[in-house]
Structures are given as structure tokens and as C-alpha cells.
Image (cartoon, rainbow, N blue to C red):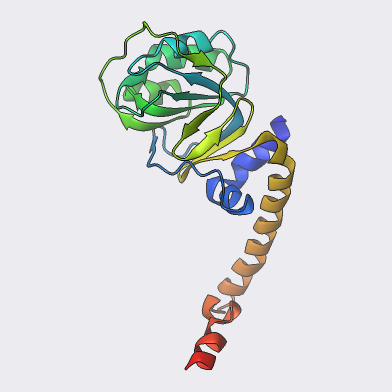
Length: 208
């Protein structure tokens, strides 16, 4: 699985999204806390109570090396559900990254820590710790369904989710897409125009 997730991380969000048939996109703006980072791994889910982060604390007990910790709540809200201390635990226990459908805080400290974090908001607003929430249940983030173990890919473009049963298929399609784009890039570097390569000029002439 590590080789597969590394491969998908290298392809990146936009390529994987296209290769997956334009499905699985987390269609909200995300703050990439550490610029230049990219990551991929199976989802470990903490579904918090509204305005609460007790489930994030509980999730640390089951976090596995290489997991992407995905944090949500019933309604997205700019409440700081993760900061330096929780992120320290996640890093120590081997998390590949954290995706937060709420807010992160302690941003300078998170950058120094080095654990890749993508967050819907940055806010100092504190969370309560009273609602039990749920661990490893299906959630929806930015229109994308995330189930425990589904692969989450993150980079500067945002995040995309690949159902675990489609992982090999999407990796193969991503590989093929990269090969096609490499061939196209060489033609563009040689001076050809995409207007001609895609037959748009001929189409426009026929219509005209």
C-alpha cells in the first residue's frame, strides 16, 4: 500500500481526480498549512460533535503509520479542532497528513512541526471536549464521500478521495494520463498548438 499511496501522491490531486473520472474531489477551498507538501494515505476518520474535538483525541489511540487523519463535524464550522499538541501526537504515531473540515490553529507551530495539514479554515476559536463523536465512520467532506480506508490524496490543488476498491484502477489510469501528458508536453515544447492538436481549428472551420 505504501508504494501505491506514494505513487498517487506523486501524481497529485488534479491528475488523480481526472483519472478517476472526475470523481472524489473535495470541492472546498483548503488552506495548505505547509506550502509545498503533498501526501496520500488511507483515511482514519474522526467525526466530531458540533464544535467539539473529543473524537480527535480518541482517534489518536487507533492512528496507524501512513494514515491520513480526516476530521469533520456534522456541519462545517470554523472551530479550531486541531493545533500543535494534537498534531504532535499525530506525527509521533506516524500520520501521513491531516485533513480538517473545520479549523486548525497554532499555524506557526504546525509549520515547525512539519506534519502536512490541510484545513478549511484557520481560527483560534477553541473546541469543547464533551461530545463523544465517532471514529471510522463514513463522512462527507466538500461533497466527497470518505470511508475508513479510502485513499486521500492532498497537494497544493486541494484533496481528492479514491475508494479503496478503485485504488489500483485509478493508479493505472493516472499512470496512463501522465504518459499522455508527457507526450503532449513534448509536442507543445516543439511549438505545436493545443488548438490544432485537439482538432479545434478544424471544428471551427467546419462550423464557420
